[in-house]
Length: 270
Ligand code: SF4
Ligand SMILES: [Zn+2]
Image (tube, rainbow, N blue to C red; front, side):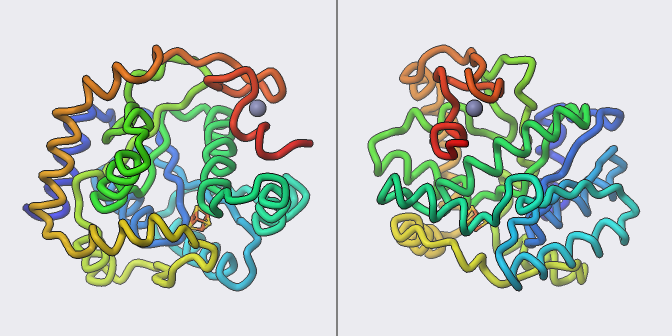
C-alpha cells in the first residue's frame, strides 16, 4: 500500500478532526517533516514546534530545515531554545545527569526532557494533539526492546494514538506514520525534495537500541507489520501489567506524573 494511503488510513482510525489544532513536533529529520507535509496536504490545522537542543552544527542544520519547511508549508513555527529556557544545551544537561546517574543512556534522558517540554508548551498553545514522526521501525524496536528488557508494560500506552491516559494536563500524542516503513518514508521525502537533515543525531549512542535497530533493519516490511499485529493482540494483557491509566501531578513542576515527582524533575534537579 502506498505511503499516503497508509497515512490517511491511520488518521481515519484515530478519528483525527480537520478542525482541531495539531502541533507537529519537528526535529528537522525525515519522519516529522513528512508528517507535517502530509497533514498540511490533506487539509489539517497544524502548527510546527521545534526544540533547539543547542548541539552545535547538527542543531543549526535541523533548525534551518524546520524553518524552511514551515515557510514552504506556510505554517506557524513555535521555537523553544533550550539554552535560553533551561540555561544550557542538551549536551550539558545530559552530562550533568549522567555524572550523578551513571549508565543512563543519552536518548533516555533527552527523550524525557523533550516530552516534558512538548507537553507543557503544547498545553500553553491550547492544541488538542501533538503529532510526532515515529514510524513502524521505531515502534517495532521499542516494543522488542521493552520485551528484551523484561518490561513489556512500558509499551502499554503505545499505539498510533496514546492509550488510556486520562488527565486534563496531558496532551494526547498521535503517530500518523505508525504503520509506515522507515525506508518508504526516506524515499518519499527524497522524491518530494523536502528540506530534511538526513544525518543521524551525533548523540544517539544507545548500544542496545543500535543492536535491535540492526536486527529490525534486516526484516521485511511484512515481518515488521506482523510484529505490530502481535503487539496489538498482546496489548490487553500488557495493559493489565500496568497500574490504572490515571496520572497525578508532580509535586515540583505540576506536570502530569505517575509518581509524586515526575521523571523530568527526578533527572534534572533545579
Ligand atoms: S537521537 Fe537521542 S540524543 Fe539525539 S535528539 Fe533524539 S533522543 Fe536526543
Ligand atoms: Zn516534575
